[in-house]
Image 1 (cartoon, rainbow, N blue to C red):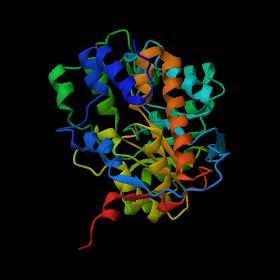
Image 2: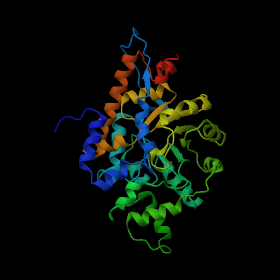
Image 3: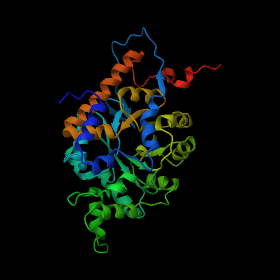
Image 4: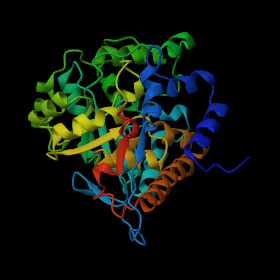
Length: 370
């Protein structure tokens, strides 16, 4: 097999390896997948305006996220059910992040619990993604468990009051094998199992989770979450300046520009297209992060220039996981870091914390005004 040298190589390997229903669960979007496709294509609409003859003999990739040092501004987004991609699942992703000094975000609907991650991967900066659940006590218990397991921030998903329609999953009648669990909910199920009869398949697990999520959440829930935890809170799923301002007003410590990888509401702007509006509204009050469509270190550089403090990726890390567990995911993160480093040097940039905004422009900048 040829050497895998870029993210698209890992994508191709995953497409050739995973069973079709699992592949389409990970590599698909809602409805007609307009947002899913445009997330990636949108990066091609931005171009560099480099400054040459700069001394780039040394350059710095390290930064901090909410006061925690990381070796680079690249992290892993929350993803559900990673053990479908590799037996080691989220543990392997966390170990890959630990190896390269990156941040890992664990999904509430992971196949590995916060306790397992916290006990097995001690050197990784860990964040926990949460939804507001109908049962506030259940939400609170999840948050407490994450705190006790050493997680350093909560990532509150704000863009998923209900789940989007994913046609491929519906056609495939996608189901989680019986030996898998949504691990963070397993303890909660034990509490209520006497009153709920459930077969162990994704259909029933999915029904439980859908019923558990609250479609009535508001920004006041962020304020409530702020009261019940000492951890900083990141509002994930922000696409407008108005929502960025609302998140900050209600206590968010950071804002994460994301459209959920195109998996919930279709026909949304690509994350990179929404970034500028959000960044301007935030006006450096809090850190701004981005995910969605990131496929190279040059994409990372573009997002950093357009206002992101750090950039997260989901599917690329997952494709690495498919190939070779921790080592595969680590290699993908290494590739992204190396491409970012080379891109910075070629563009005349020496520090990720000091990237000029005008390094990157939309291609319409060069459109004739005649």
